[in-house]
Length: 140
Image (cartoon, rainbow, N blue to C red; front, top):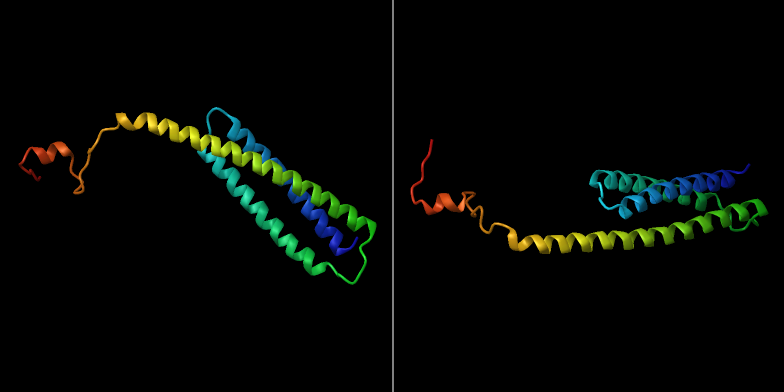
């Protein structure tokens, strides 16, 4: 097996792992309650896989000889990678829409809560509004 074939196989494995992570992301974003720590872990894992994929892409480009004709095995592997990448792009776009929906629901919840928040609980000096109103400052 050529080095290029090995790199393409590694890329396919990473893309499969990325699909698993993005499916977990979609489940998390579709749930009624989102766990911030779980979503952060998923995001970190996704970033790590994308960095690995970027590294492998650089390796692929270094190994690929534009003057040598690609054999059917390489073409088939590359087609698999292309198909998986397009599917992951669609999945990522869908997850982005889910995330936008979550952000919008959070904004709406904040707008509902805003009128009920206590105004001016602490002043610029860090003191409560009631301690400033008393006039006397007591220190211990």
